[in-house]
Length: 400
Image (cartoon, rainbow, N blue to C red; front, side):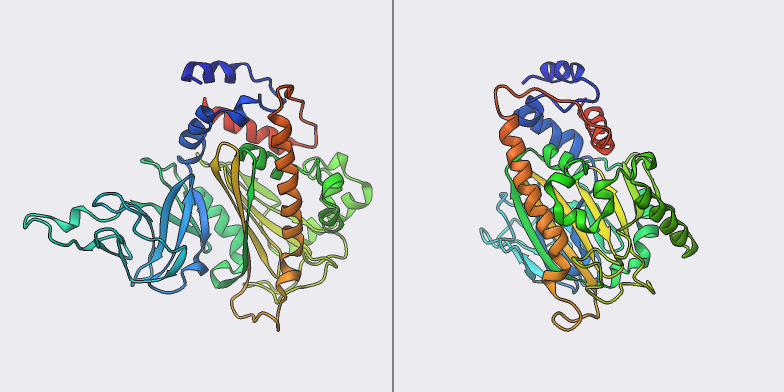
């Protein structure tokens, strides 16, 4: 599609309806998505526990760009483009590891963990190594969550850092370790993945396990008037108790240019954490003194979500790989002082979001298959999908 055709397509988008087919299938629109709705924003790449010591590194795929996340000898975290400044070869070929230096396997140019060029064989006498370090990208952290920006002029991120720190701080993410990481490849456009994740209209028919833990799966938390009376009473009681604990407000966000939302909400009456039976699955994290029966969330547009119970947390990283290919990676955190097999069991910690994500993969794969039909037509969103509507409005503004 030409730029003019994309503009025309946006103008024809009917408010309150799912997107027209070409938004989910057209390669030119996908390229515009990457340039306007993804790369200008701060993108989550992983937790700092993946690079605990100087020399530790891992690779992050950001819409097809390979980025090396490193920690240098001074403890600073860097994001380096994995492209040699000589003739463009990949410098680092291992997905993760420990090395204070990166030697390009092609012509042996050697780089430090901060990206500076240390050695270049047989170059002219006037060659200035200081001008040929690996390209660096800006890095920000929120309680150990590493965000990277690949744009030339990053949008401000201070408000997100401030709010995320306030909400996630009590959970002690900077003193956490990774209990498990797992990735799924979803054969669907990234927007279908995000739309699915941002609504619970499908939870009752599709996620019985999730709904057995989270009461809001059967109640619209965005509108108290739609809640079942028993859940509404419990929610009001829990919010009063949470305020008495001194926790942050129920929900706040959308500050500055970077859309984000922080929140606190209850699980189910009698459940103190997000587990199969509602009982603790690990020791308390951070500065928390009780299993409080709630979760703390941080949503950072367009591709990140964090949810934290009192004893473990789950970090979501969504990454478009192609027009109809998206990677979904989950990372589970526990307190750094815990021991697997003694203090926690990986299957119990990962149960809820692992099985829910596996179900969502199948759901969204099928959604894309249906959208690909020549007979597909956009349908109206329900009142139970307010965040999807908000996301689509945000998306259309970005690419328009």
